[in-house]
Each structure stands twice: as C-alpha cells, then as structure tokens.
Image (tube, rainbow, N blue to C red; front, side, top):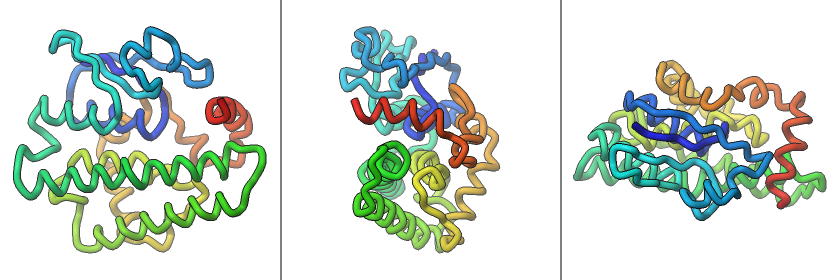
Length: 227
C-alpha cells in the first residue's frame, strides 16, 4: 500500500496520476498548504524540504520518498511500467522528465507567483516567466509534431509535463498557437486514470479555468509564497 501525502497542485498531481495509471492501491492524506501542514514535524519527517508530495510505501518497510520526480521514478520501477528498464527509451523518458523538473515546472511556478499571487505586479518579472514558459511550450510542440508522446510510448515524462502544461491559463499563457501541444494535452485528458488523478485530493478544474473568479484562493495562496 502506498500512503500519499499531497495537495491539489501540479506536483501533487504528478504523483496521484502516476498512482492511478499504475493501478496501485493508495490512501490519500490531504496536506493543507494554506494552514502550513507541510511545515509540521510529522510531515518534515517524511520530507525535510517541507514540500508536497511525499509517499510512504508500507510494503517496503515504510520507505518514505519525497520529490515528485523521484516518486514517479520509484513507482514506475516498482511496477515495471511507464519507464523502460534500460536503453534509449529510458534515457528519453528521463530527459523529458528532467525537462519538466528543471524547466516547465520552475518557470510556470514563477509565472504563477508574479502573475497571480504577488500583490505588487512587476511587469518585467511577469513577462520574463511567461515568455520562458511559452518558449518551453514551443519546444514541446515541436517535438510532438513528429511524436504521439514525448518518449515513444506514454510514460511518466508525459504525466509530469501534462500535469503542469494543462494549468497554462493559471500562468497567463495561452497555447492556441501550439496545435501539437493541444492535441497531446487533450489526448491525455481522455485517459480515465489521468482524469481521476487530477481530482486528488480535490478537483481544482473550476478555479484553474475560471481564474478571474478565484480571488479567495489567490489570497490564501499568497500567504504561502510570501512566507
């Protein structure tokens, strides 16, 4: 059994979508970021960095794993699915997973901070992170022009990037010009496991899509990023 400690964020969804796609039994422990539960001693014992998600594998002597990418790799290797065991395809999956972790996630995260959460709007910062997000989307779009998925077959690389890209409106970035990226995003939405995974621990779709009506959420999130 996997115990998942998570919140409704792109990094949290990376873990829950992976669990759903792998068909693993898991329990959900919702962590309230706005109440600072990720900073409490009991959670820091699982992840000293105080960030979600984290998992505990009760079938492996209660092994705790933190960092969303590390969790995805661990779960894929545990089941032998969504990540080739060796060779070129494994390397490709890892490259596109790192692309998300080193690029898409950080750039969209900073776009969210400056575009949505900070009371003081700094145009230069907003433009910087939105433009870099769009550039990264262009990289994905170009690759997907000749590839159904990022690394051959559907993999954890697709899950990781999709969990972030699907929230592009929240970052203030549109993807109308990226036809291949749109096709890929919509195709993954059609996967029942992916659709279910992004509702864990709660469904944030309405807030993400109707961003102009999300003032109360934004005020709460502002407390997180400014501490």
